[in-house]
Amino acid sequence: MTDLRRDTDGSGIMGFRMVLVLWFLYLFEPARLLAYFAPSLNPLKWIPTVLLYLGLLIWLHSPMKKYNYGFYIAFLAVTLMGTVIAFFDGNWGIARALNRQIFQFLILGLMTFTFVNNANRIRTLFHLYFLHIMFFAVWGLFGLILSPIDPSSDPGLRKIVAWHPWFDNRDAFGPLMIIGTVFALYYFKMYPGSILKMLFLSSAFVCLAGIILSFGRGVFLAMIGTFAFVWYQSRKKVTGLIVAAAAAVVIVGMTSVISPAGMYWDKMKTIESGVSSGTGADRFRLWRWALIEFMESPILGVGTGNYGIKLISLIPQEEITASEYTLGSLWGRSIHCAPLTILCEYGLIGFAVFSFLFLDFIRTNRQSKTDVNEAETLQMWPSVLQASFAAFWMNALFYEIIYAPFFWNILILNRMVYLHRTRLNPGRRNSASTPVLSAAHETAKG
Image 1 (cartoon, rainbow, N blue to C red):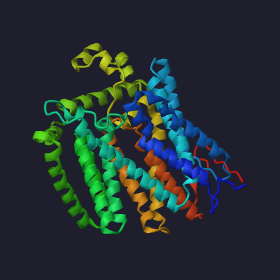
Image 2: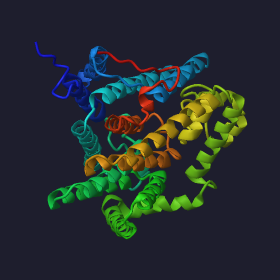
Image 3: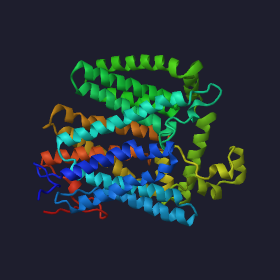
């Protein structure tokens, strides 16, 4: 009987197909979409989880070499620690959901590292990831038909992709659109042919429209920072300036169509107020309170998702009232700054682990870029991921997206490319397949 787990190059074809199905289900979330419009189909949401654990069984029984992700596992351990702390403060429902999400992406990552093990498979997965960004970009624009922008209300508060738990608001939708723009521009650079180039250029315009649609001031600043980073990394500086100028013209033109009565630029002008008033003053206050929480529990933090709940017992009632908050509105409140979230909810231990995760990305991404024994299109992926990673962190300074799925997706894709490079260069020490932390180890069968 033919072993369905192997194909001609000794890799697991069954495992690869399962990984593709799982990435599709977790990226596009068709079960959630169907359940939104037909609530009776809500049990379909369990399908990705069931298939994930089925895929885990295939992975465990595969004779292929397996790779750990030590820093990722360590961060999962930190969030579990945060859950225990949150439990004693009476709020661990949010923490449980976050732990489950991180654990599932960890499993998906381990399967990806093992089964997506050649150039063609890597390209296929990157194409799928890009298509999912375009899927949500189109949904966001379609939402303008379902829910037009109301000039009498704050456009930043409207639901963008109403059925999705993350992309229904600007905090995550805007950052994803910046990443989508980066992907589209690199695709435009990678692939020849006028038709393909026009397609990818159009995709970049759609993502730019999504950036405007988010009406996020942090998104606007992160967009400028990301484009500046891409320009700085590029070799053709003059061409980059021309592209940036063209993008600026497109953005100005799109705002006149998407944003009625100049609402977009009116909102962006409020950036000038800094932290003296409005949203800036509110976030400055939340950040100051986060530092107070950190000083209260500097080693272990206050617990996963426990920032707002802990504030009630730390901040005087008079100060809360003067800040136009109530005890109810603080419950579950987020900081809107990912680094401060890690610092106050997980303490110095969590911050150290996450810093190692951050540095590990930079190290492996840099090593992937130095290995050039590969086709031109595959050489571009480390640069795409580097720019996407920069886009994430520029947005993370203003938004609570540390648990957003696209962050973990970028980490997985980067490690996948790195592992492929180390397979092509066996002389290079493969730190991904040696123990990184005591929480993880490599296993091999066959």
